[in-house]
Amino acid sequence: MSAAMSTTAVTILKCQACGALDPGPRDICPQCHASAFQPHSVSGDGKLVSWTIVRRPPTAFRSEGEYGVAVVRLDAGVTVLGRIGMSDPDLAPGTRVSAAGMHKGVPVFDLA
Amino acid sequence: MRDVVITGIGSTKFGKHEGRGLESLAAEAASAALGTAGVDRKDIGALYLGNFVAGPLCGQEVLAGIVADEIGLGNVPCTKVEGACASGGIAFRHAVLAVQSGLCDAAIVVGVEKMTHASGGQVTQALNCAMDNRSDAPSGLTFPGLFGMAWRIHAAKYGTTRDEVSSVIIKNKANGLKNPLAQMGATLTHDVIRQSQPIADPLQLYDCCPVSDGAAALVVVAKDRARGAMDLPIDVLATAQTRGSARIAGHEEVVSFEATVRAAQNAYAAAGLKPEDIDFVELHDCFSIAEVIDSEDLGLIPRGQGAKWAADGRTAVGGRIPINPSGGLLAKGHPVGATGVSQIYEAVLQLRGQHANQVNNARFGMTHNLGGTGIACTVSILGRPDA
Image 1 (cartoon, each protein chain N blue to C red):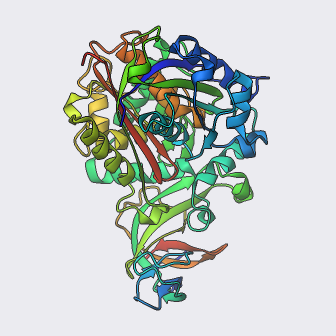
Image 2 (image 1 turned 180 degrees about the vertical axis):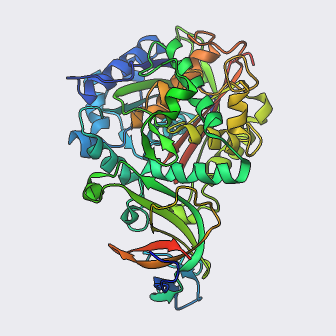
Image 3 (image 1 turned 90 degrees about the horizontal axis):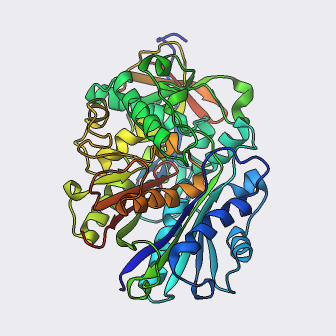
């Protein structure tokens, strides 16, 4: 995927009582304990915390073959798990990435 | 709170036990522990059993009561404890608490798992139950994947190399060769490790512990009731348990587990000891890089230096802080629910001076058992009575 591709928004949770953001899913706000989370869209831009390529998937993902998984710290201040392309084995933690699409409900990241 | 000692210990060989059930493995370990504990079966007031995946892999639950029945205990409370890979360590802690508090004078701990009959995909799927299925599992992450990511951060922050991490494997596999109960002792070279198949980059095959069957057991007794013990009773100086983040995203850094850091702090405080007092540690090396991270989280090695210390030989038997003289999970094996109990079995042998890979003059030993993505941890400190 090309670096020029526009960023896909990532849907997280925002507490309507205290404003805390959370990657979710979750019912009760860990900050204020209110049950007032609502879906909230944030930019899919962020920094790569780390990533791996899963070469031996669990049964539920076997049909997908090998795939990349990443932990990304979004610029919104929330850390999420997602997929990442497998093209560059030397991607370093800290590299800028952005969500380029969704796969089965999780964001798919690519180089920003 | 009463002082508690371990008087009886037992462990099956770890590995592939074809045709033998969970109950049979558990009974072998428990009978061995009861045989030397100096406690009658009728005086065992409680059983705590560590197990993680008997449900999905064997279709068997209520194991605690089944094992009690198998070994001929009375109608005492029997409790199965589950905390993923920390199940055994948590079971041990609960048995210690029961005796410390005076609920009973003696309790038995059994850890057991049977895994090798299942396919690789089934095992991975079952172990993935230890993730938060709402937040982490939908990405397709696996446990090797988590530790692969942790390795990448460790390498970026501290310059840790493939060969330095391999030194952990070479050491533990060599230790395993000396342990008659180990599943997979071996003499390995850096080349062989480098050429092994990739599992979850940068993790390769030899970075991962094997899939194992096995059981271990301990009898814990109030110190003032331990007079009949046939072997040296070993003091339980501390047994700490903590919770870490339920989700990977909740860890401050994916290169340290706060549950380990806090459990270690609590254990040192309870025992009145410092990291430099610890003579050896049996820690949770489910993956090579896990040993590196654990040893730093436990305060035994400066942050970032774990793999370098292994490469320098400082974590070998005879080194400054021997790590996993039993061979650890990498070589003794990792029958998940049995592991935390097995670590204490190995530590007791060391403190009695009876281990096949003995640490010279071991007085204080530590065990560390980590579950899930760092959600559950136990750290225990054991001591020789004359220490």
